Length: 322
Ligand SMILES: NC(=O)n1nc(-c2ccco2)nc1N
Image: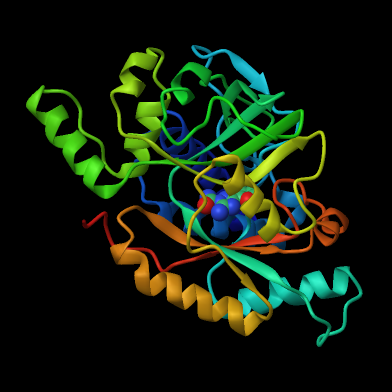
């Protein structure tokens, strides 16, 4: 017990600093895999000794507090992170927990979508009557940074939509391709300016610029995969909603698939993993979501993650090796 208390006391500041570096200065000190492992360790101790959970526990935090330099935007619908699955057994547990929550039998049909988990930074885009009114980073999940001028410079982010619901918040990932990342670092080095550790940091550092002209000069991409506030439903299922976002003009990841069974999910995970090295951009897993939006509604959210989705991560790559 005393050892557990001491370990939690050691982990809290370590994870807090790693969190700021990862989300704040866009230059992490420890790898994602180490960060994930420390968070798992912390959660395991808290599960074993619930009364020892600290008030500054990293388990309750999503993302990082927005920095003041940007204006702040309060998300109408919280932007959450995803719980992680590392082994196939975690995926079986995920499906089982959903079936028990919904009183579904083991053999009742339950479809999921499987989408590549883009390793970039989350962005929320608010459209009113088809016009982009603001763009915000995730921040701490409740409040993000206003990066509207920056988002407008990204080609794959439409500033006007036809046939959209009056209020439509689209969520997705801003990312940079490997080729664009290498070329940017070469230009940065030539100019004697800082180079980036990996494409995610390059994307975050390029989007979170107070001078949008700098963002405009950076090769940023965007995949849409979720939504926030809606004045009318996009569709009845996750798959149809994604297709509707595509029809509205957003880039949708072509590896997104509807899976009718767990075996389909795992098969598609392996399919995406097999293509990982040739995609030309970083992914760090596959996101499974319950396809029926009525069931998603019933499943709802835990404190920081949806019950209806999980991120099935790939084994960590030893270092950023490309
Ligand atoms: N990062 C990423 O690619 N994500 N993240 C979600 C997500 C997070 C919460 C709801 O959906 N979905 C995908 N494809």
